[in-house]
Length: 99
Image (cartoon, rainbow, N blue to C red):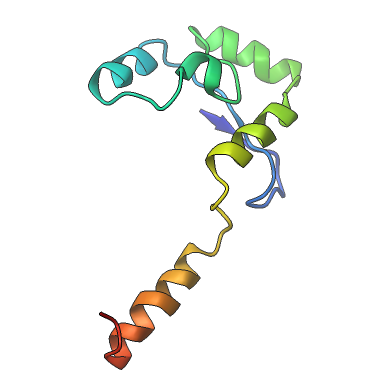
């Protein structure tokens, strides 16, 4: 589950909270992560819905941790991917200049 403050743009912090206790371990077995999931995500991992609800109600979000996570893992997420795709692939393909 992801909770997002209204009005935040691509460069703003987004708190991530996971509420499926089996998901990280199952994904780790099948595909793997680049880092330790439970300590590496920018928000807590919950075992129960009640824990998640208590966390959301408390409103104590570590937005600085989220910003550090985003800076490390999403440095290229600038909201302009479609624009780059069109200018670097679609237009050259239509013009016959794309190799």
